[in-house]
Length: 385
Image (cartoon, rainbow, N blue to C red; front, side, top):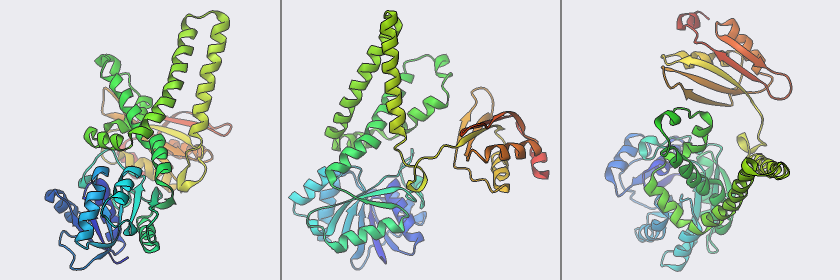
């Protein structure tokens, strides 16, 4: 692939442009919002100058309801030899493409499973798709050349291609993306109904559950509308489990002894099913999910302190698999949680102790350990270390 076009310079479109440009592809940018296109251009995602000849592949980063119309318009303008989209639903746009006047032979549906809480070209990142699944849903008339160009796009963006039928895709994303967002929003809405003092009790658990609820409501309404039937089916299944949980919890509160014992068993079974389902989410690079040891460090909100903490791990060649920050309510401090291999936790703990960090507790017996580090390390001592 030598040339490409991106139609729609939001988060995904601009990120595609940045990824392709970084790999030497000449990218042309289009957007009805010319300001967004200029921002994407300024960030290095491509050029807003039109192409004088058809590009190899055009990426349509537009809402699901606009895919067929935009495809038809761009095909009439001979923008590209092949076309794909990046919408999160596939069956509806596919039906509109196949049933309209657009040429479905040069089109293949696509959906990169990547995103961010923020939207727009300023939030775009060239590495957004690295290691992430990218679904491709060919139509019956899609040519081999178009499939191959889409596969090359996925490769250039560092993603992992998954070929699947559009209906299977839509049910899958209803389970793994669309319903979780709606449920997160519903759970977050509960926070608006409690007092300020009660909300101050919120910890990392509720932050994790509601993190994705901070999406654009208008955009997500369009997404849910486009995949409404599949999301409704998943919500209905979830509703049955919720009803069982409600009934069991009511019994635990007010039932007889024998009834409470049975109800506790039902709650345990629901929790066990959740744990089993969680285990099916693949880990890094598609491998089986691994169990890491959290090392929690209390740090001050001062320049350089977080980088010093990460430098301690790097000095021992310890890979930090994941990291989260929980900010304190009252002061400018926070707790940083570093997820490392279980065997690396005691090594990192010793290093932190030697370099002046105050390690309060570490438990490393068995497969899972936990290290909790309290107190901030003086930056002067950090530099000397």
